[in-house]
Length: 262
Image (cartoon, rainbow, N blue to C red; front, side, top):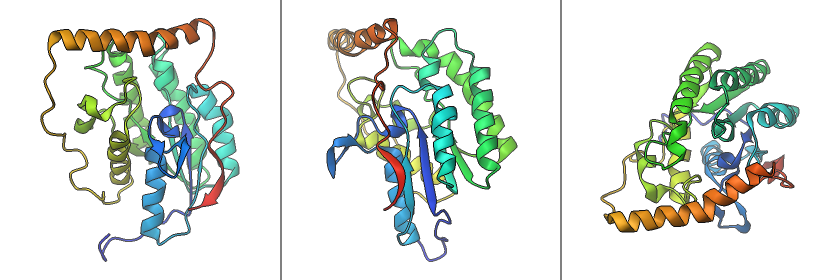
């Protein structure tokens, strides 16, 4: 950080959301039993630039829907009296074919209003572009509508926007884990840099959104085999849970439920 760049002003950062913010599938190098992810990385960068003293909590839990995030999670977050809240939700809702992106955005906007009323800053994020993803690409139109609402509510209420849809680096499958839903460590790292930029801070890496070099070109047969394996290993179990009314987050609790100093 240059001498001209002021240190981040935030003292208490709380992250809420689903698996994306929980950090799947970035294994924490300091605790292999837990995931890290972009929000933890962002907190570490803010703390470093402050010279220490940042208090951080991460209440996100995989599988959570918007109503969960803007309900119990939000109230638990506000009870911690943060001055920065990241709220990223809606991805699990959008996977459901009959969801209304407008209603999702309205729920998110009410949460942003509630957070802003406390004087805290808010970081929200657009949904990612699923154009290249088989099956999941069917949600692209719903995501685009949700994103349009996000930009509008952010303007109305002074929220910061992490533009995941616009991140060129995330269009590379090497940024994604085998389930094609969650990011790798490199993907989470890139997102954390985008979050710094969204908050008006200089990224550590000026090339944070430059795509990787050319990848190994797969044959049509290799791609079909990979798609079949992905469907069997990841899509079918997810669909089975849905039919049974189960979630990957059932019985899970937040990994960092209380503010702790980094």
